[in-house]
Length: 173
Image (cartoon, rainbow, N blue to C red):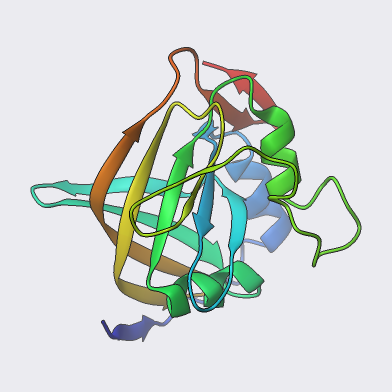
C-alpha cells in the first residue's frame, strides 16, 4: 500500500471555511464510527464522510481529519471497521466524536461491550452492521485523508432506523 500523490486543493478566493461548513450542514449524512486495533493501538472516531466505491470487489472510502490521532493509528494498523450506527446510537456518536470528555486521550472503549472483527478491530454494540476493511490506499486531500478499504467481512447487526446528522443535530431515518 502506498499513498497516491496528494491532490492539490483549489484555492478559493470567494468561499470561506465558515460558508462551506454552513452549506455542508444542510446535507444529511449517515453517522458511522470507524474503529481500529493492532500494533499501533486501538482508536475510534465518529465520521459522516463515508461511501461505497465498488461492489466488485467491495471497496469503501472514509475521510478522516489528518490532525486526528486515529488517522495515523488506522494507517499504521492497516485496517479499520466501519460501524454503521442506528438511531439509538447518539451517545456513542458523541462519545467517539470527543464530545463526552475534555480529555482527548480518554479510552472511548472503556465500559463498552465490544466484539472483534477477524482483523481485531472493535465492533460496537447496537450497530446496524459493521464492515471489516483492510486499508488498500489513501490520498491526502486538504485537511483530510481519504482512506480506501477493501471489505473482507460484514458483521450483521440490529435492525431499525439509521442515524443521520443534519443541521448540526442527529435525526432518525
